[in-house]
Image 1: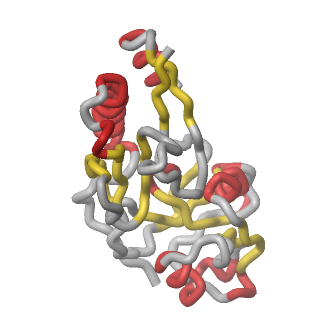
Image 2: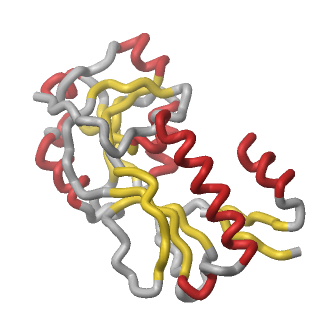
Length: 206
């Protein structure tokens, strides 16, 4: 990641350990120093952070899939495509509940238990799937099919525990990520962009 190279040049004595997981690491227990989280606004006590953007979701497919099968333009057109979906046992969220109500089971080709595997399947051209704009719009292999107009109160937050808010190493990483994510936000989804309806790193000291 070029942005991490820039951070390394500015802060050569800070070593970053990056953990990617669908499980929310416990910042209070020290499982991570900083978290980039998407979902409902944070409610855990003693967390401080910065709201980066709204977390919106749309349907995507790979460029190769679109070339072979075309792109659906609405929920009704998904019946003519291979749909990739999240495993409801792994994602107990209003978003998954909406997906189960909105898409017939017979159109689901594959259910998966992590965002990482869902993204890999989309990139490999296995089908069409719902993916966070924050993730998909920065991926050159994916193309937007349509925006379903889902209006859940999901947001993207950069968080740390209050005991670390003034730690100089943590502050350096927070400030850098905040600047980078906000400068790149136009590639994700604007928090103010209207939706069309359709039929974290951990700094370690050396």
